Length: 286
Image (cartoon, rainbow, N blue to C red):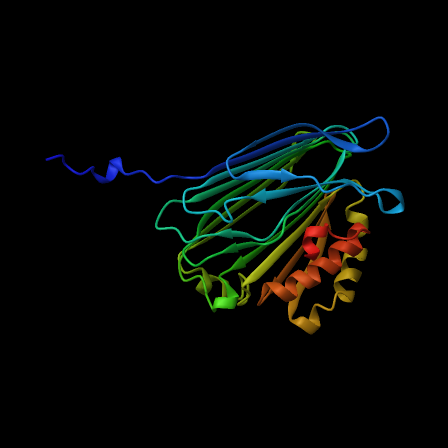
């Protein structure tokens, strides 16, 4: 009689997704892809570019055909912008991080911006299910005169199901270098009973959704008053969303906290559109 395989012989299938793209500014002024690699469930879609007075940066949309990220999956996104390239990267929908029975999900983003390049990283929100375990790394290398606008939103638990995160892990690390020198570093870690930690006033004051808008550009500090005016005009007080902005060393940082993602997303959309002077990607509006 053949012995049944031991636990070490039973290996789960993990998703390993990777997208790497390179873009450059063409002689006519438009930004176009010069190289693209896709593997696993990660794909890139390119909406038809607009022409005329509404024409703007090239838009690329990341798609996860797996419908979410499970325990132990590994996803990597790389984007390289040549000099003067102009790109918006977004996602088709909110990304879901499913419950894990131990293994940590890994998500890494690496960006490179050449001279006078402009990149707006505008994914839709990431939703962490109760029991999710996510380690996320975000890195960027940019020229001194490049422009980088980042927006990231996190949701802790599925509010529609009344779910809270009583157990889980979030390890979030951001590192951005300008002309080879570290310009921005942020590490955020929550482990164990995340709902309990978010309830603390020094952490999130009970908020279950949070977002960061980070802008690095030669004129970033001079736009602080504009950012604060946009916060005041966003209607955040009416929907119980807290927001604040600060600027230093060529950077502007705006933070948002809310009890639910819906009001926070509405406020963030108003601020982003006003700050960028353009509508959000079309996938945000569907």
